[in-house]
Length: 341
Image (cartoon, rainbow, N blue to C red; front, side, top):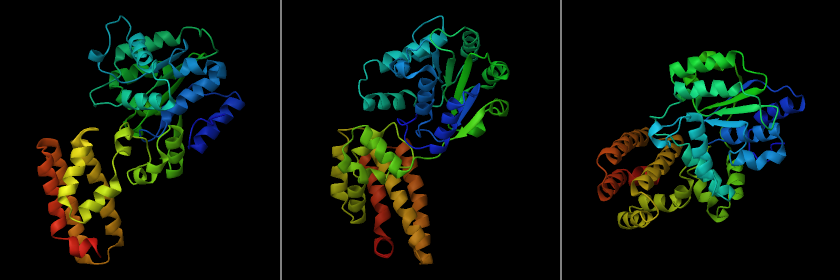
């Protein structure tokens, strides 16, 4: 039933049972880290409720009984009397020319990447309440998928509670959150909460292959993989974490600098240097676990503090050569004692 969704066997089993027994809750809350597939499963759940014949309508956000609610900045929307209409038209417009699964996936990952200033305003919630009382057009249900419910401000959340307390029988809500602690407890208590874990490396390999990426690069990328799909996956896959780490450990500053200059043609040098710091942090964590010498443990701890300084430098005083020199300064005093121990 949910063959298109990788991982999350327990969550899928619960939803399959609710469909089979025709005991669908009025409100679900999908909680888990960003990029693990909560929204994808919400859409697939909607397809199963509407019927397979409406799959394309749902995937293109054109089904008249499906509404996607998400945090936004008003300045990013076209002028309209209806916020609900505007945000759904914005989504439809963005997805319409994305023909492959890879294109659609990357579009959605980036479309729903937030700066932190977005929110779900109370005017939109009021529109949603009015719309939820309307009879379905094509199906037995009207489905509202509300992304990142934790970004709903207090006034909006309290207004939303009114419809959650007694939702119309023909309406259901699927809420998602990256931060369960940020959701109003009274909202949580009115939902069936389903917890999503991280994706395993095997899960990611299936997704990676399904999206059509070069399988020869997957082992290298897995070093960066943290259990979720990043909006920057295209850039991350082009980054050779093994090669960059080897150049650092050998002290090859010149070729390291050349490599990052080459990468700048594909994207931001700043972003790739942040990726390298992530690689180096993982490497140091591994060394810390393996290390038996107290002296070397202290040196590695000092390096973590230096990495924090470098991250701050990248934010406020970014110059490629300066940052790379700072990174290689870490290597000088500890190479013999730590790297080869």
